[in-house]
Image (cartoon, rainbow, N blue to C red; front, side, top):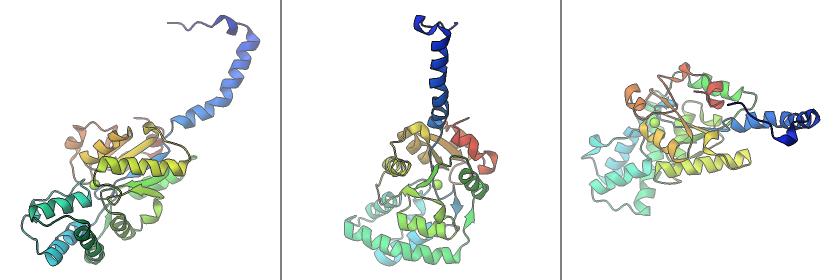
Length: 261
Ligand SMILES: [Mg+2]
């Protein structure tokens, strides 16, 4: 259908003035559509730690709580640290009070650091280039973390790959036990850095499991799924992320920030 001009806009000078007003708003309109916050999951998305985190968990359960049985049944991918500890405490009927949780995480960060020294941390393919490309954009977005790791655990892991300094903000397992709520915290912290409340379409979540896709959806964000970690390509595909790649070499940062599928 052809657009019809309102009677008041049929005069050429009024049309010109209207165009002038709009012309100044075009850059704002374009940048208003762009992604201003990119939130990365850590394990299986940014890095592989050779199982250092899982080994540290097992070591603390064993040495501090004498709890070993059932550990091999736990599924770590996409989970939050606090929910994993509670699950194992429940299995062994250990009270998950603040004292036991504090005791666990106090020893966990020690053993995580220790285990990372015994394993090799590998950066997932394309991560370094993707981050560099994001930072090189004319209007680079804020880079943050959205992870089930506690904050200190995230820092220890990412420092072992020289990636910690790349991120300005984030949401962590210390903020909330539920990943969807960690996403809310990460978005709100990112919004404060940008200086305004970010709508979901200006946020991208990048992760390697359906948990990441779900928590991105919980804040209305677009989701880029990468098949470099806990889930294979077809499993991720069934959760319908906005973008799906085998690894980050398959997509350009500018494409994601423009919101283009
Ligand atoms: Mg992950």
